[in-house]
Amino acid sequence: MRPVTALGEESERTVGAPGGFSLADTCGPVAWAGGRWPNIDWRDGAMLWVGWEGDAVVRRAVRQPDGAGGPLLLSGDADPTADAAWAAAVLGLGRVCPPLRDPVLLRLHARFPGLRPFAYGSVWDGLVTSIVGQSISVASAAVTGTRLAALFASPVTFGDRQFWPLPRPVDLASADPDRVRTSGVTTRRARALVAAGQVALDGGLPSGDALADPGAAAAALRSLPLVGPWTAASTLIWGVGADDAHPSGDVALLRAARGAYGDPTLDLKGLDHLAEGWRPARGWVARLLWADLLGGAPDASRVDSGA
Image (cartoon, rainbow, N blue to C red; front, side):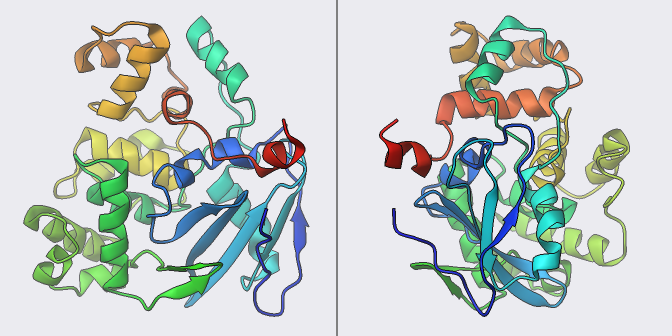
């Protein structure tokens, strides 16, 4: 395993990982795009992250060298006093899955017991990535997201590749939709991103209350241009890791459910009906099903130990 070099003047620091937390299982979504995401990547058992904190773009690398349940080792040029809050928001530390009763789901939870709700850490970032990802594959969404981010920020070198932080509300609110369109999004999505930026600047997006009242947050999101049920739910799942958001119409989730339940005839309407039985954990179940379909991130501790 090639080590991830600490950045700036900061030495490596430790954040506890309670409850058997698995960085590899949690960061499956980081690995699914194969290094194409603009601001995150999984390299040699570490998650690399680049983003805005205040007015600065900062970098963090996080590893779990002892495997699931072991402490997290962080390095980078971000403020170490913000590490715990960052880990809670992005890696879901401290989050607990609601009780599951379905035998299929219990089997999946046993397969990924250390999985927690990975998220971008804000409703805004979840909204941008969900609009970009409408009706396209994970890989295509990652490539398009990188082109979009590169329109508004200079590249940041981290490890052996370049990253770009996701655009801020002020970036998109003032952007020409035709310029946004050059990233590869459709004209309607370009306009929706610009409109969302203005709403966010005006204080119209749900923020700290999104987890406390996800129903109200989803309703507020649905009032935005081009935000339907799938986009609102995906925003809450990938923005803040909402427990019970259900991305109705998600074709990857349908594929995963067909495989997990052994029912190749299951359709999207049937999936919505099935998901009613997953309450109040539909967001967690979606993650478990996607992980069952696409896997977790490669666990360097297992590879190094020959497990």
